[in-house]
Image (cartoon, rainbow, N blue to C red; front, side, top):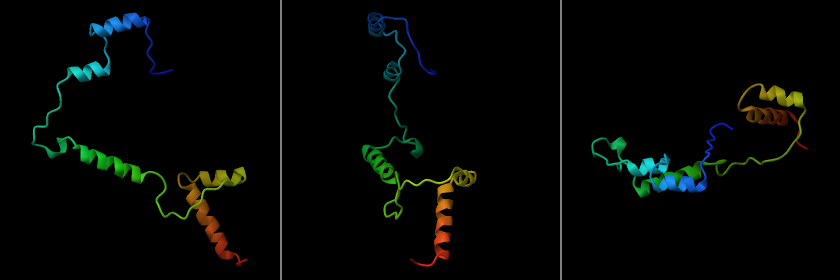
Length: 112
């Protein structure tokens, strides 16, 4: 697997290296670096306040998923493979295009 790093050290050896400060973990690098201090000059560099971070999180949560008030309904339907291939060949938005074709077809039909 890519990105995996293994070690031949035992757990006791790892603990001893950690106690001596010989490990190279992200935690140690962060703790060793100086804390961020805003110089007050560039507003774009200003760290967010707790309230601003919370507001950003709430905004993100509201934006996820289908918009509220949508009249779409999820369903399972089977189509022939060639029909699906033709719509998918048009790229992203194929489901929207398929919906538009079906809507146009409904307009040509007499009400039941």
